[in-house]
Length: 380
Image (cartoon, rainbow, N blue to C red; front, side, top):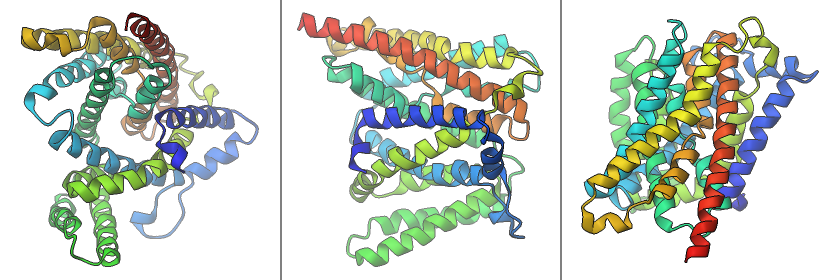
């Protein structure tokens, strides 16, 4: 699994999983495979009444958010976001990269039943964006990767906030309140280096699972449990755990989610055709991100003191980040599922738009990255 520590390998596997899901769903065995994914076992226990697709999206994906939250904590305490000055530029760019796609979507989509999909084009896929940069960005200054990583982490933080605020249904506060002391205990025990490793690990697993169950029962999307646990995990053991989990998340969790989420039967959208929802996501994802991140990056550059401006990203480098930021993919697919859960036609249309829009951003971002990197190598 160590190969999946490579950002390039992670991006390739994600792409292959998405293509495989689309091909399988539209093959002769597609109906049977999608049926298995969507089947609900009759267990009589509500917490177990989840389809395989829901276990992947609500369960396994919580592990991805757990790893992202550990990385976010590290960036906030020891990394590229450990001071307001360092966080300013990527924060402004990330904000622009959320606001502009959302506004563009709302301009293009007018149907009230589809407006709830505005968060779909606001996300950036860390694995894909960093994978393309690693693959084609040889020769670019290290500040480009640092800026892209900081932007993507902040973008995911915004996406997490959106999921918590807009996709919570029938909130049950008591399970959520019970989860709070468990989360605190999880963070405290993670720092107890004097405890026997086996005992500490077992207790953390029990607390983690219990927290996930309580958050799921509260009506808040269960991935938020992963976020909360990752943010309170002690720094040093957290980095070790992130290092251990990273290849499993990149090589198993994210590809499984991409495979499951991209299982869309294309004919499902024929009745409504490629309507405003499709075009809203398809245009807002690559174009909105390009405009929003570029504008935010240029504004942030002007906010930097003149004496430090030389170290800030130049316009070509901002364009690299802005074009790669349009690859929404994983989180955008999750947003589509959450926004239109229960309406297969709208989920299919939004999913195809995410795949198509991310592909456009991938191509444009790849060409931009290779071009700017080549010029950077020749000028150095």
